[in-house]
Amino acid sequence: MSRPLPQLADRDALARNRARACRRSGGPDLFLHGAAADEVHERLKEVKRSFTTPAVVTAFPGPWLKALPGARIVADEPVLDLVPGAHDLVIHAMALHWADDPVGQIIQSARALKPDGLFLAVLPGGQTLHELRTVLAEAEASLTGGLSPRVLPMGELRDLGGLLSRAGLALPVADVVTIPASYRDLTHLAQDLRAMGEGNALADRNRKPPARALFRQAEALYRQHFADADDPSRLHATYELVFLTGWTPHESQQKPLRPGSAAMRLADALGTGERPLKGQ
Image (cartoon, rainbow, N blue to C red):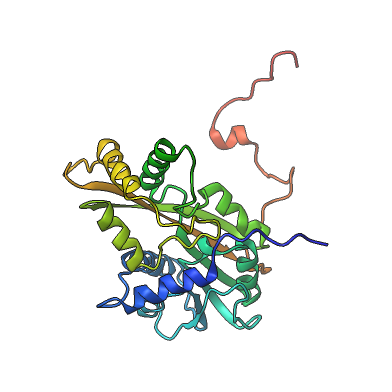
């Protein structure tokens, strides 16, 4: 019997955070979604293929419908509302980082693709808000001698890229785009995260309200170590967007040659001579 997956997110808390972001005056502030959608739009133009049945897995449709008018919007539930073989493009948009089973999410997306269909995911990467994570940990350790989960752990590029092959996708590619930001203070940064629905919804979070001293000390540490280089009165923050791309297998796709089937020696291709290794 397989063990149940560890729970990363408190789905009820995550839903409340997202709903609160949508209720704010002017709606959610989705600047990261906008940047991700613009980047995806540019990448799709480079593919030079017309996608006629796209689907987008996301909690915030606005920026994605702007980039892909007419796309089918699918909520990022543990079981995705996708029909097998119904789409030629599935985008998992800024939601995979909250999944308890990211491989399962990619597999479900891949099953919804036609042969030679494109899967593309974008999500925050491991360097996102590393400054905030560092100062909160240092401040809490000095005040209490312990640590509480306060910032969502996010995957590193190599680990996330490996998910594509595990899901059975061909021609996997993973790359990263870094987006710098600056804030007046720690409160300003926290407001930005809440406006994106990205508040703390970790299942293992401490439910007790944190002491005010924690954030005072964290901000002092932030200003000491991560002041903005262009304006030291502001705090520098890093957002990292990881892009994962893979295709459902198809006979028309390029395949690696069999070992030993090369028609030209490497030395000839490089225009150099061959020398035997010592001892041979």
